[in-house]
Image 1 (tube, rainbow over the protein chains, first blue to last red):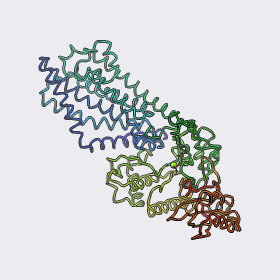
Image 2 (image 1 turned 60 degrees about the vertical axis):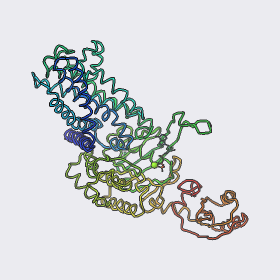
Image 3 (image 1 turned 60 degrees about the horizontal axis):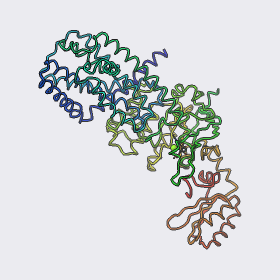
Length: 274
Length: 338
Ligand SMILES: Nc1ncnc2c1ncn2[C@@H]1O[C@H](COP(=O)(O)OP(=O)(O)OP(=O)(O)O)[C@@H](O)[C@H]1O
Ligand SMILES: [Mg+2]
């Protein structure tokens, strides 16, 4: 009985928190420009480069997919990671912390809302890119593709939840931190080139960013000709992504509880403008 | 453990340690590294009471509320809310409480009033339908019914505050903490909200409210009992009438003076007779005196004469809670002077 009530509360919290994210991100009208047109421009640049050097045509699809996935990374970095910090600054954190519900449910709600809203953007980039550059897809294993995609998102947003918890006590540095992470991750996660070109060690390191392996696997599944450029076999990548998901979500749970305790002791849980 | 106590604190204390650079004064005086926000606070609030905590800025009111809300750990002593220790089982405490503070800025600007409140009800497990019913009811009460579909970045500060006030009652908490709920609101709105608080308490006898304020009138009108707090310590705690009765032997006098050359010097001398506050009002000096004995008026008037001042007004008043406060700490509720 109690378990059922707790479960229902958990679900309500997730949905309750996800809703404003979905609606809020849509109501910001500029999203079409910033989240769809700009990434498409970047994609175009890479497409033209690859065409100029006469790379195999699969590289076009490769880049479009990278462009679509960028949307998720941006969302995790700019909305997810600094979310709790912003909630604190705007005075919402207090409300979350006093509510008799699970903090993980609130974090999950944020993640889920962001994911759904971002999927609209990612899909727009993918569809427009596919049409514009006439990408040809040869889907070999649909269930595997869906699996890789979902696991990538879980691991990616798990990472966002972890960062968010760690940022809880950050002051303005949170913003600089996100700035600092943006470009290196673009590079390391191979959004626009095969991650294997980084060399095995760098690629292994970059695999900590869930996007790296997710992209590598999805590309293998969508463009069989790209297998030559693959970093690891798909089923390895799936397993590692699963491991990362558990690591990040578990880590987020631990970090949030830990940070909350520290903040409460230091009197910084609801103090703004540090 | 007594279930009939909504709040119980024992020797509760909270010290903030400041980082060195924060503590340094502009003149480079030795840095103060600690702030004692609460010290030795013992409170017992039975279920069903509307309890007030009255104190000036920085007295420790918000700190007390945050400790009871599980947002802040105490550095000494213990606190129980609804019979549950706030440190041992904060999650259980949260099932019994609600919190609203007047200075609050919460809510998402891109969402409507209704959507913001709906989200909140979900964290308490209310069904959507029940949530919406209560939202409509409360928005009506605070006079925001016509704004239900307005995005909250279009609301004025006061409207936003009314929305947050409504939020506090949405989940029908057993124990509600209101931290300066009428801060900055106009007189009419404040009265409206106070009336609602009173009605809400009358509806069900086991409901409890702990309210902080620095408006003495609010505490006087609304609260069954009031604790007067200053610099982190509770100076007195009783029914407003009983607190005022303690001043019965003394009298509260307001003098309006002109031509006083050295107001501070005069204040210094008058202090021998009782507590006082001093302020400039419309070009004259206004002195509120709490005289310990009635016959001290004679001596006070004499002192004014010696200071070269002229009396343009003199009123003897019934003591207010403000006078109680002045008598206890020797200065006004809203800081030095007034
Ligand atoms: N997080 C914090 N870090 C350091 N000092 C703090 C913190 N919170 C409060 N203080 C200090 O504790 C004391 C009590 O503050 P508190 O906010 O409880 O006062 P208050 O009675 O609510 O005042 P107000 O009427 O202005 O809201 C003040 O001296 C304040 O500077
Ligand atoms: Mg306060």
